[in-house]
Image 1 (cartoon, rainbow, N blue to C red):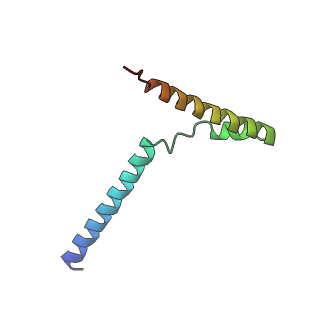
Image 2: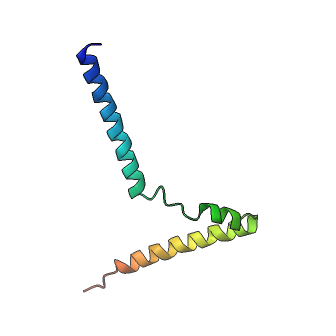
Image 3: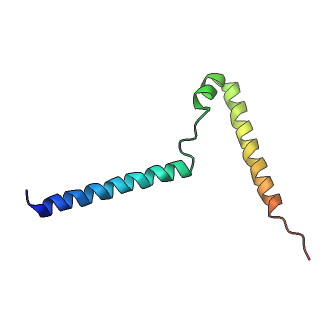
Length: 78
């Protein structure tokens, strides 16, 4: 093999490795791997009623977080 082909292969493999590392870092920073309760919730909420309750509780948490964010940004008029 010529040295230019080896250099090209090393460059491409380095680029793909860096791309994979960036994807991993992005996944960690955005919480893609934060799934601690997945299996426990799957066993605990195995019926339709429990599943609906879990979805409703999750929506309430989101609404409370949005409300807290809005109240945090509240500024009274001068």
